[in-house]
Each structure stands twice: as C-alpha cells, then as structure tokens.
Image (cartoon, rainbow, N blue to C red; front, side, top):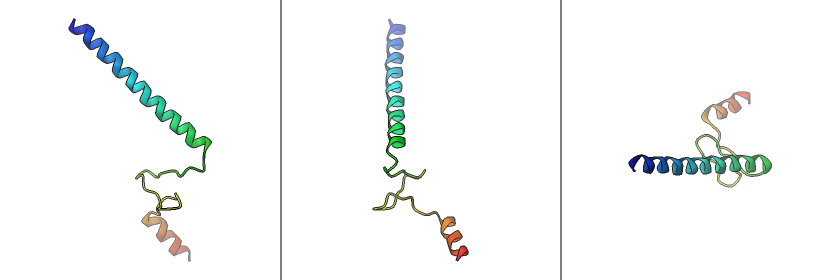
Length: 67
C-alpha cells in the first residue's frame, strides 16, 4: 500500500510540474506576441514609469567616455 501511495504522489507532482512548465511557456509566448510589454532584466528591476531597464554602472561610464 505504501508503494501505491508513493506512486500516486509522484504522479500528482508530475502533473503540477507540467502545469508550471506550461504556464511559463504561455507567459514566454505572450511576451513574444506582445513586445510592447516591458521586459525585466535579470535582476527583475525596471525603471519606474518607462519599463526600461536600469542602466548598469558600466553602461553609464561608456556613455560618459563617448562624450
């Protein structure tokens, strides 16, 4: 009986994992179809109103050096 219970638990966990993966794929596809939505950088930070990524310290230095 313990083996059957373990098998049922594994099957339930697999269904949950499948649902999470399907949801992530749906979000990725939605982002591709609607490019006007703001994309987050790796840190998840965005500018307050523009949806643009925050400049990193190096990007700011490059702009100053180019001036």
